[in-house]
Image (cartoon, rainbow, N blue to C red; front, side, top):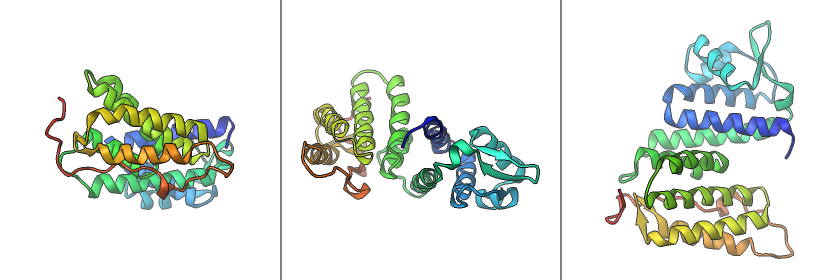
Length: 238
C-alpha cells in the first residue's frame, strides 16, 4: 500500500491512537471514526456518529474535524475525503484494532505495569505496531539512563512486527534481532513486563524471517506479544 493519501492517513490515525490512549475524551472520536470506516466511505449522519461515540454532536464534530480525514457535507453528514476513501479497508482494520487497544486499557490493569508502559503494551498487543513505535519513541526521548536502551528495544520490537505484517522479510529479521539483543540484557523481567518471553518471540520471528523461497506473510497471531508479569521485577531500574 502506497501513496501520499495512505501515508497521511497512517500518521493521522497514529496521532489519534496516541491521544486516545492517554486521554479518555478522545476515545469517542476513535469510535466515531470507526463508524465511518464501517460505512465503507459512504456519508454518515452526525447523529449516527454521536451515537457511536457516546458523546454530544458538537464534541464529535470538533473531534472529527481535528483528524483532518473527513469532509462535512452541507446536509451535516460526514464522509472520508477522496484521498483516504480509497484506503477505507486499512482504516477499518486500524480503527478496529484501536478499539481493541482501548478496551484493553479500560478493562485490564496488570499489577506492576506503569500507566506509561501499559499504553504501549496495549497498542502492541492490539496489532497497532506503527502506533506503538511512535508512542515508545516519545517515551524513549523522555527517558534517561539504562531505561533508554529498554525503550529503544521496545521501539525496535514494534518496528519488526510492523515490517513482518507488511511482508518485509529483511526489515523484520534485522529489527527483531536488534530488539532481542538489546532486551536480553534485562534478564527475565523488568518494570512488570515479561522480557524473556518477548525476547524468545522476537528470536522466533527473526528465524522465520530468514531468507527462504516461500512467501513471508506471518499472521497477527504468529507475531510476538508483550506479556505483563503481574508484578514489577525486583531488579527494575528507576
